[in-house]
Length: 480
Image (cartoon, rainbow, N blue to C red):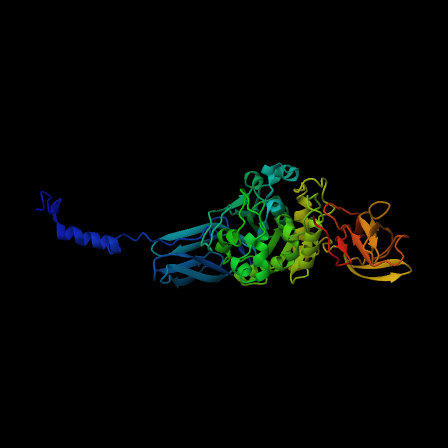
């Protein structure tokens, strides 16, 4: 007895209670509660990348024996959880099909069902990628009544930040129907729908988007911090109450947790929030692409959207960002969609036409990644020029079928001499060349087309794609 406190409880003497307590703390007599656990991206309704070696992973007790059985080949694979409670197994996938199941057995048993095997794409960026039916988009609202398609699956990652790379996300796979589509990226849906209808395989779409974000927050911070130029530019990201502004935090919270999940490629729509740092955007964007490829350990195709014409408050910042994106498109295994002809209101930074944007991204994927016959997808681009009789003769790549004007004369076209004073230009077309002149410019030096914030332009290839805005000079451009 210690001051009236009994040394036994329910007939058990205190030394035995202490022993039981120690056992409980050490887990020696606890039931097997550390069951096999899976990341959210490995779950019911998921789409696995076809004809690939995909990684399955999760957590369990250290040294726990785990068997994995895949129903498409009835093969069983064995692995053992490591000392840090993680486990992984690489398994081969067949050609597209399903539905299938995967059974995981350890101290417990889990069965993941309704699995399809097909093509998986990451769909990321800022608000123009995030826009969905809930935003009031007419093209999505029109699609809702017939949206149900079990061969299109969504994995919508919620907005999350973290200062270090995370191991999981709070999301789940769903099938496409009028409810799930209404809150899913419109661009991603129209991209996936075109792939699914053309390739006749299941398509899995993983959305990770956040309106108002700069590319820095989607880039692993180690890439930015070890590059002096990008490190300085990142300081110019303005803070916002609606989105993060620190390098790497969206990457850490939303994409890093799924980099073990096999994918076919990436579509990206972002740039509006980097118009203030256009001078370093090509360096940043290509570094981001390479960082994603390193994380996924594959040369991912990366197809992105050039930002649309819009009346930014600062002069020429949109034009300079579009130029940086065009320069980025020369990076290996990338492709750029031009949207100058898809904008009905240049005072709205969120163009309503998402159907054609998604379709053009899909045409890039069909033509380049899948080597399928597709609609024309490579926009005509300025290639070179010569001076001939006081005129500049411009040649274009991807214009073998010739150029055409949607209207009487080419708009948003200017020419200058050495004085750097630009005059509205006259022009004529000869196949895939454009002759440009102005009587006031006797010795022309430079031509600009569509090179302003809100220019839409009317110069197209004969296959219907707009010419990419360009300038032939590299003179300083005012942005105040």
